Amino acid sequence: MDVKGVLGQISFDGEWITITKTPVGPKPAPIRIRAADVTASRYKPGSRLFHGYVQFVLPNSAPAPEKATGSGSGGRPPYEDPYSLSIPRRSNEAAVKLIAAVEQARPIR
Image 1: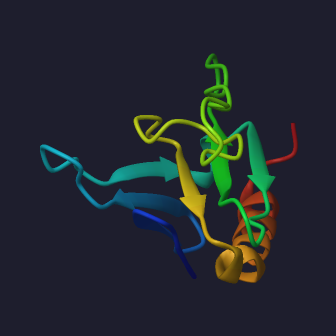
Image 2: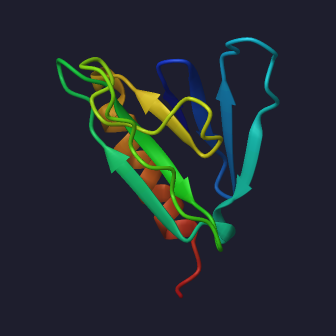
């Protein structure tokens, strides 16, 4: 299951979430997260004017705050946040399915 983002993509194989970002500067390594380690998922749908985002929260860490500077950001986490990815409106449906699959794979806490 894949979600195409603005500068990368998120893949989920049923156990592992892989966030691969298109490099801006040095090439970042893909981030791999076990679905069982995710404590929360955040999703903001993209609209015609602004990109949305998918973000995963891990234990003992606070989610990166939404960056609201400038009219083009639309309130989403910064690119540097390794556990989130901005998504265009056309990826909303795939993002909802991915979030649902990750939530189902998480243990009940």
